[in-house]
Image (cartoon, rainbow, N blue to C red):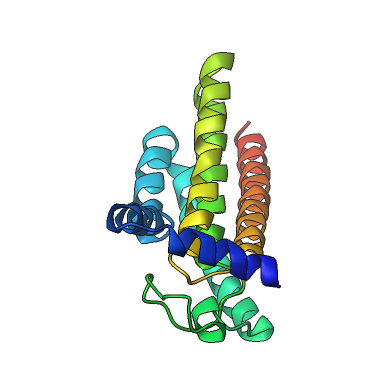
Length: 182
């Protein structure tokens, strides 16, 4: 789709060294560094929930790998010679694994915020701030020339979906275990 190419070209044609460095850092937060930071935050509030986080990360990463093989969409820099691979990536493009992970991390952080605070302002500001994270990761993947817009949107959607489902399962198991003890 031409509009996806145009988005990447716009960002790359206006990119500075500082801009690229910033988005490379944002991209790192959408991978293992993000997992580590999210794990630490979730672990501090709820140790069992942090196990669910790591579990969904592993399962979602495997599903993402399979989806990439099935969809087999080339990366933008492979299709268009004027797009630069600033992310030093290879393999297939869709869905974006970094965006998927950012969706997981954001969903777990929002859930952790909800179970740890009752203050409406804290929740509202927290949700807004945390919601920016997957959007920044998605943007970083386009700026770096390694994903199309639809790759990142599908990645975020899958990440949020997987995280939401895993939290539902976690709560179901936790509630069942709580009832057995009573």
